[in-house]
Amino acid sequence: MDKFSELKINKSTNVSNNNLLGNEKINSFNCNDLIITLCSPNEIKPKPTDMNKVRFGEYFSDHMAEVDWTESEGWGKPKICPLHNLNLHPAAKVFHFAPEIFEGMKAFRGEDGSVRLFRPEKNVARMRRGAVRASLPDFDPKELLSLIISLIRIEIDWVPNQPSSALYIRPTFIGTDASFDLTSPKSAKLYIITCPVGAYFKSGFQPAIVMADSKYTRAFPGGVGNYKMGSNYAPTIYVSKIAENMGCHQVLWLSGEDEKITEVGVMNCFLLIKDKNGELELITPPTKDGLVLEGIVRESCLEIAKEWNEFNISIRYPTINEIKKAINEERVLQFFGTGTACGVMPISKIIYKNNISGEFETLIIPSYDKLPEEINIMKKLYETIGAIQYGKSKYKEEWTLKID
Image (cartoon, rainbow, N blue to C red):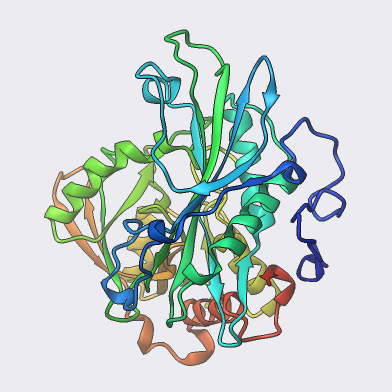
């Protein structure tokens, strides 16, 4: 992926001939067959002028991309067309057995006016892995990336030109055949919709309070917690409402009798402590056993931190008891989440339900802005990632794909 930022994509937006995503021959749709139908002038919607007033994921752009697959005929021709409702049979498999995956990515408009995608090859590769696990048909990730780029070129004016704003991109893949037969889908639809989004933190870089109760589990070993499947998220809404009623912003997800920390809300998490020898250690859970999503911002933070080479990095599960002990010994420095929506989110308190006493305890995380700059790792990562995404820095510019 070293030359990703130098990728030249022609007007057909087909990236099949480059080696950035491999040269494997895959039975897939082909963006050389792309059919484009644009909105009529009276179908064009007004674009938001104040992104602070736009709720996340509720105001969509004018066009969408879609491509259908059937077992008998394979992939059809991809299309870009005006945004429309889907016409699905009530027995469509997605409604009953949830063969569905999605991605979340953003297009950023930099101070130079250019629009950039952040490591999009990671998203399409992850989506392909998820399709295999959901028994959905295979596709060429290069062609999906071409389709995304074609759509963003058409919707380029929807990419906000306001601080900390972006165009959110949601590729989605669903099984559509009308059948109660619990087998792989015999038809499927892959589609892409986009929506402008503002800053995740409306009032600045605000720390979150999280609820932790091991009664509730987000994922389990050998499961599908490491994929972006809708079925992973629906059961978390109920628990999130419980947390909200307790004055918390997110849920800190625990797993197992030892109460391993896995994720926070829908984000990966990092814990910065001083180990017993007084050395800095950055800890994040692993992603290979089905408990934790293979987050792209997480991976990027790890790669950056390794290059800094300023502290130890551990890929392991911290536990609630470890955090409690480290807090009591004044060794906890920072605890934060990472994800596409917010980039980096500081955590200030954990409202933890003790699984022995049944009582809630409040665990206080030191304020992120009280640390000396040289060890304020969360802030440094937040600013570094943001600078890359918005093209403010030449550092890691190969991680971005500029769309002209």
